[in-house]
Length: 342
Image 1 (cartoon, rainbow, N blue to C red):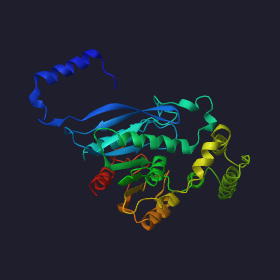
Image 2 (cartoon, rainbow, N blue to C red):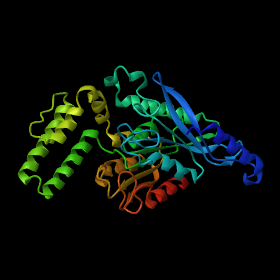
Image 3 (cartoon, one colour):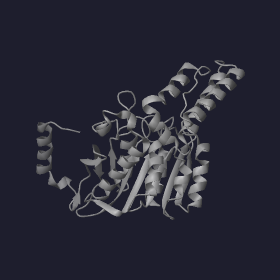
Image 4 (cartoon, helix red, strand yellow):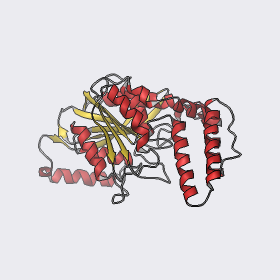
């Protein structure tokens, strides 16, 4: 965050007149701007470095946001600002872990970059390449221990982190997959929509027969998208029809390439012994725990290390619970702490 010159001078004066407040031999915690390039686009991020001894190399984590226009802090301004990744960075600071979070394509200072004039060419692999460039930037920071790199992803970012875990060098020592996209994208969308239809039918908005017809139309729409055919929206409610229409046209390339990823397959490329945390919340309507079953099994077959899957009672997709609607739930903090110390 930029500060006015007067505020900076005031802060300098405080440090100058009260040196006893500083811990001798320790560098105070601080944020700094980081810039890196991927595919001709300059990306902007924030490196947070915890308090540490001068010259000390720290374990460090790359933080990856969820789907849509989600920025480095985990927000989608102006409508949604949960600060998910900023709060994860704060939590990891407590365990002495440096973090890098960045504005991915379409967000913050980065914007669309090289894709500005042809956004229809922006596909999911471009986001993975951008994340790989961010990982390499984190690796090369002077405070970072390249032998102790971690990747922490939320939702779609967790799937991206899983793909990185099996391909980057050096391999990360650990992955935290927070409420991960653990099945193919369109399968997850269909599951979410059918759950919404079931609730709407329970409330009397649809008859059971209408619900069955809409569910069949959802399945047909998924097949059409996967076969690159126009989606028939006649039997879909307007909001669901609009969603499938948005998956076509300029967004078709991204949707097709994201849906092509089957996360359990990606687990096979992990280095045996890689420590993995996989969380799912019982109040998460976007990523129900059942969707993580196949990925959990694949991680076990890949001989990933612990802590493994951690089910979070009462936690929603944004990592909140009823008593903590704007901050990370205590169960989430405990899971991250276990991951950091594992």
